[in-house]
Length: 468
Ligand SMILES: C[S@@+](CC[C@H](N)C(=O)[O-])C[C@H]1O[C@@H](n2cnc3c(N)ncnc32)[C@H](O)[C@@H]1O
Image (cartoon, rainbow, N blue to C red; front, side, top):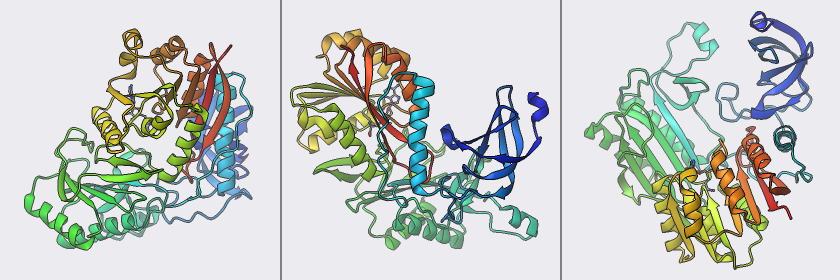
């Protein structure tokens, strides 16, 4: 059946609900059909793009009825840009779907007893909530079907986002609703300047061109960092660009650049040059200052990060005499945030530069009861570590999307901390890990938090306590 189904058109399919990763679910002849870019309630004709024995994937090719829950997307790039795919669904429903995702993952994957999943904590800002955006320059702008059909010649240089699944096609962004004014102004002014000056935009296929990448980071303290990556070591042109940004945007507090002649845009191994101002920006939370360097991770929705950390602290319920492990600590933000309520906090993370920042963040805030270690969690958190450190009363763990390595979960089962606070940006892997932990732990609270409105992503915090 599977191959034969490919390209088959299924008419009049009623979209039922949203499943993991933002895909919508319908049924056809008893099989699940996953459909992208639709909304529950839509009635559509779809073309099957993938046919497996147990499910199909399909794309909508014709809409007969639109769901009553649909709203008008606010962004002109909606549908092409991969950024805010849920703009056509109202925010209350988005939150409901996100919470439901957590319920579904825990029922289907974890298969453990859980209390009622708490109502999701929504984000007050549903637009302009990000503190960091990353734009790519390209000489291969994505053209719309209408543009191609018109037969006209268009400007092909672009500065914007990658088209999903196409590494060399960039959508030219005119206005992005994810980050505030400075971001839109810097991007648009820089693009205009580069076009006027005839500077080259990067050719992603042939790996050539001056202008490569633009990163803009902002903070609630009013500081901002702009990093330009150049694909050529051409000091005259680099100077031209940086002088322009400096004179046009004197409010930028950290104006930096990188010469990147490598095959990819990552720059953890490259020198970052300070053109003007400081080489970091600072975020503030409950009077604590967090220094963010060009290579440091910081949660991209600062306001919701605060909500997330408050829940983690509430679940940890520290009395002041506990040893806390903060696993996957990044730049030690959670560790430093809870430090004043604990006897000692031990943070572990594999990016060495992040650990340097974590230590710095403790020292600039006068925090003396934190220790940080850099290393891969599964190698560092072993029997020897357990023997040479005090055992934790509370473990806070915030792994990447892949969740925790099985060895790490096993180690947690050995450590037997009375309490684990598990923060996750992927409830599916979190549910998998919780299933393993359920050998010794029970789930006491489940609290989803929305960090990324207009997307299907959901953050989730689970409180686990050791079974008696
Ligand atoms: C979701 S972030 C958590 C950041 C931090 N808790 C915060 O709120 O800012 C996950 C972190 O895990 C780190 N990481 C990923 N894999 C790791 C591993 N195998 N061992 C140690 N750290 C790892 C990443 O570098 C990243 O900083």
